[in-house]
Length: 312
Image (cartoon, rainbow, N blue to C red; front, top):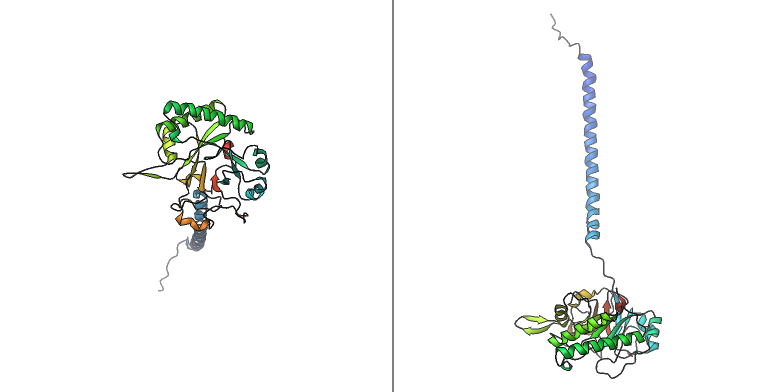
């Protein structure tokens, strides 16, 4: 007797069901492999794209800075086109520069402006030994502010122009000088102009680990009063010496609040510029490109505005 296995009535139906399950499993594996490939591709794309995007988000755009020159003597109308090829702004003395009895800048505003220059307007400050006490300093601060404002009006500078008080002394200033600056600031504001100071950001060692800059000393005494700072610091570094590059933010001058940085002077100070002496001319002065005859040795500046005295 031959034994025959009895088949279930569902046998014929199980075969298509098994095939269906097999097909579904096959499709699932194909889908998983496709997703895996897509995931890998997406990861590669993100790995390439994210660093660039992160760099764009975190990188700091170079500051918008502008070059300017300053001279004690007006260089002459013929010099302006050559100077304008490099510089965006010029200084302008409202009175005699330090050590002089007169100025040849008078009446030159229109010629300078016609060449497209902005301005940084200057008035010579007193020496500290000329201020007897705080009362004397107060009177002289008011007097100098009055004279500077009148001169600015005669030259055609509008109200609201920043007039920088030229302070040639370095280090910590005496109390009488701080009174002089405060009187200058307040009286200029009273007549509709704004105040600034040109001063040193070169550290002066006071001993016992203490160093001070004139800019910081003034800032500490001015308090919350609004005043613009034009600082000089030709020490290499941070100064690059007599070069003309627009990627020098004034905040790197040694005084972060500076709006203008005078980074090169003529003639150079050998003790402060030894590391960038090659960037000066052999005679130790700074000359603008195009001045092959070396007619105008000058000081070089960088500012956050092409017209610093009118900056709002």
